[in-house]
Each structure stands twice: as C-alpha cells, then as structure tokens.
Image (cartoon, rainbow over all chains, first blue to last red; front, side):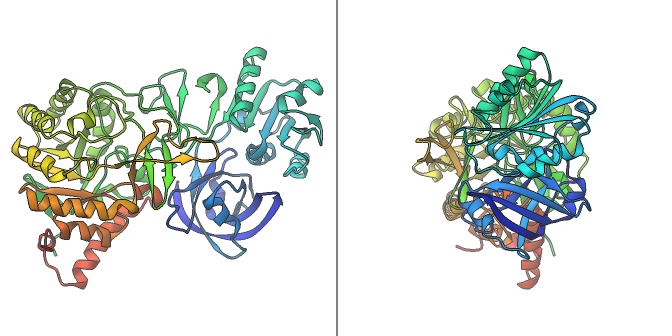
Length: 256
Length: 301
C-alpha cells in the first residue's frame, strides 16, 4: 500500500561528485520492488513538490531502503545535507518496477547510465540469470561499481574513455562482443532510444525505466506521461502515466 | 456542531472538496484518504471525446507552487460514466463533474449525458483552463461569451451548474455577474494563474506549452481577494480555491465569502490534506464555539 511517512536517515555519504548515497529506515522497504521509486519531500516549503528517486537497494532485513541520487537543484541539495538520525518525508513505494521474472534463467543485459545505474543494483540482486551488467558513466568517477560486481559480470563504458570502453553502454556491448535474450535498462533518454532500436534489430524484449517531471507521483495529475503505441487504459488516448503505469515499460510499447 | 453547507439546493456534509484536475476521479487518492469524509469529489475535466493533452514536460515547480499545462487529458464522457462514476458512487460523498469542451456543442453533449446520471450532484463548467488553445478559456475571458455559454448550458443541464472562473481577467466580478445573469447556480474560483518559467541551463521553457497555470500556496492571497470581491458582487454561492494547504487557509476562504472550498495542488504535497482540512475546520469551530459553519461564510465584511 502506498503511504506517506516520516522516516529516519540511517546514513549518508557522497560517493562521487554530487552523487549521494542514503540509507533510510522505513517499513516501506518490505514492499519495495526493484525498479520502483519513492517520492522525497523537501522540508523547505518554497520547494513543494516531491522528488521521485529510484530505489537502489533494499536491506536484507527489509527494514531499510537505499537511494543514490544526484544533486540536481534545491530539493536534492537539501536532501544531501541530511545527517544520520534526521527525519525524511517519503511516499512509497511507487510504480510497477522491473518484471524480474522475464529475465529468470536467461542471458540478460542489465544496463544503467549515469544516475540510471542505481535501480540496476536491486534488480541484479533479485534476478537469477546470466547477468551481464553494462554501465556507463561520464568519467572514472564511478559509483556502485563494486556493489554491482558482487551480482554479475560488469562491463563499464566512460564517455571520456578514462575507464573501460570509451563511449557509451552500446559501445561496451560491441567492444566486448556481448549478446543477450532480454534487456533491462535505466538511463538518459538517448541511451534508452539506442536500446529500443538495438532490441528491435535483435528482436529481443527490452524493459526500460523512464523518467519525467512529476507532481503527484500517484497517477492523479497526469503530468508525467509517455506516448504509447496502443491506447492507454487510463485516459484511452496514447499517453500512459510514467508514475503508475511505469516507470518500467517494454520499449516496443512506448514512443520515445 | 453543524458542518453542512448547501449550494444550489445540494447539501454537502462539509465544505471541503477537491479541485478539478488534482484528484483524478478520486481513485488514486482513495488509497490515502477516506473519500466518505469529503464534502464532494470534483473530478478531472471530462470532454465529449478522449483528449490526449499537451506534450511533456507538463509540470514545473515554482517558488511556493507549481505550473501545469496538462491540457485536459481525459478519457471522454463514455469511459468516464462507465468507470469513474460507478467508482465514486460507492462513497458517501457528493459527485461534482468538471466538464470541458472545445465548442458549445461539446459541452452540451457532456452535460446531456450526465443529465441521465442522478448520482452526479452538480456540474462544474470549465471555462477557464489556460492550457488548451480551443474552447475552455475562450469562453471564460469575455463576459458576453461567458454569458452565452452559461445560458446555453442552463437549457440542457439537469443538475445545477457551477461556472469555474479564470483569474486571468481584468475584473473577475464582471465575469461573475455575467455568469449569474445567465443563470449560473454557483461559481468556483480561482482557476490557475497563467505563468511561465524558463530553464536558464537548457535555455528553454520549463513547460512544453511555454505557459502553464500556476497553483499552490503562493497564489492564495490573490484567490482570497478574488473570492471576497466576487462575494460582494453576486448573490449565488461561491466555491473558493487557490493554494489551500490547511484548515486555516480554508477558513480564510469561508470568511471571505466562499460557501465551500477545494483543495488542489496541495494534494500532491500532502495526500492527506483534504481530510486534515475537514478535521482542522471542526477543531477551529470547537475552539471558537461555533455551532454552525454557515456563521463563518462571508463573516468578514
């Protein structure tokens, strides 16, 4: 059940420039699925709207959640100042999450780009598959790489070539001669477009996690829509709600 | 203690409603609040046919509020009546359906279809959405156009109609008088205030539609002022809205002359706002020994 709660920050640290890693103690962890997200509310009342942030990891005891986020503006700047023991307002858990079962026993690509890397961690932890984790960063200021290495074979691309393949995640696939039966991905739109195209060429399914500016996070405001191939079930047009019908969509079903 | 208010002959258990477009048809927020506690659910605008709405980004945050340009995405009246009305009928709350259209005929078609649905208590006519190019606000910014559509809809509507007014006019009381003269049963105000935000890093508009309607606590003083002015200008009841975040805000609107209030953008900030306002109004009435909420309506002259 979705709930807005006041939770406690367990720990927080900066793991790369402007990238923060926060553990939050909350009962919502018990229902969290890989690829779902939470909304985090700034305390400053000039910044009212919740910030949607993907769930990076769920603790073994299901009593806490980890989020890894980038400072993008005033709200996330405020979050980055929170110390252990402080309160944090969150709403969750939201969205559909990745269809883990579609990867079970298969050869899969788990792909993350930049601040799209975090949700790949919990997905990798929960999936029993031949996991090829392909992640891309701007430069060698990488994050979550070691965590991912404990959950599959990791291939890295950096835009400046300072580590792994020079270029993006698609270049890393080419350079390492990789292939897969199914793709799960989260990252910037150009990356997701390239994955959609690649999946069509290879005739394999790809499940991609989208993002968009949101207001409510629960499907009421219709702020965060994506164009869909088929008529959506809510508004009967071609606009699915990313917050509730997604954020994970099969790439073939969305026009991005 | 009486919290009941009556608007155009319709009795509401309390004056707390939801602002159209911020609450869907109640389904999403029913996970957070008991809809039975609300005076009414005012639905997202519904047209005669499905509307796809505007391109994204559709929302942006601004200081103390937000901009939106959803563009009235909706499934059309047929799906709405098959799905949303049966859902809302399960609850002991009044249903007010917000109606939008591009032409007078579009509005008439929706109003006539809803006439067959006795569970719908009132119709709120959206002539003030700033985010669609045709219809909507074209009817709400000129007094003669507002008069004409109001009188036309009055001929077809079985339920009382509420004309939802735009603040994006020179004198809202002129619009209010035109709606009243044309036979409107009630008014609701304010719709959002047209605004703009520019992303200086991307050097583009924050919203694809360039302009969006501003809502949230930052607009509340403007809304209270307009409710007060309108209450002085017309005799028909007013549903007040604009940045209401808590019971104190809601009571301001009642004192300014609103017979009921709607909670809008703050649902996004705190999904429990509606019920907290209901409870907060009751606590205020106890504190000041107010027997009947109607004593508060327009009490500040």
